[in-house]
Length: 92
Image 1 (cartoon, rainbow, N blue to C red):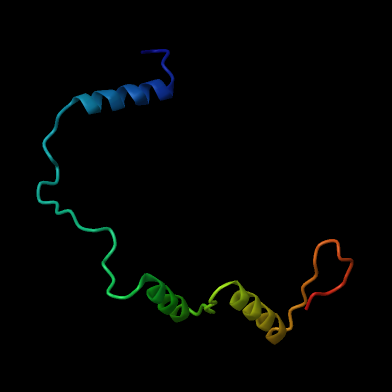
Image 2: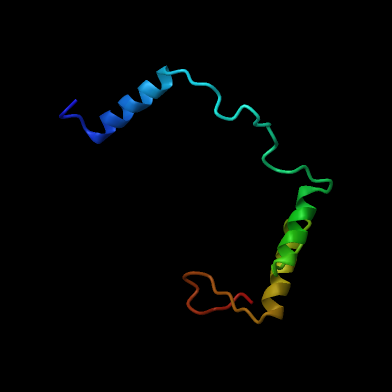
């Protein structure tokens, strides 16, 4: 295989490795879950971890609650929102 590409050489090595049977190198390995089981609801764990890391979380119960919370956030933080193509007219 003097003129073989690097890809061909790699594929040949992979084929050879797949054909060879070897003993298990980790006979004492125990299957364990990737993530630990939580006693709490996942969304509650998320909120607690987010706020502990300094993040802010605002719960919205449906679309109307979301819109109301977004309006409140823009007012409290003095955020001005303009729509594309509105030529400077402000929504909030």
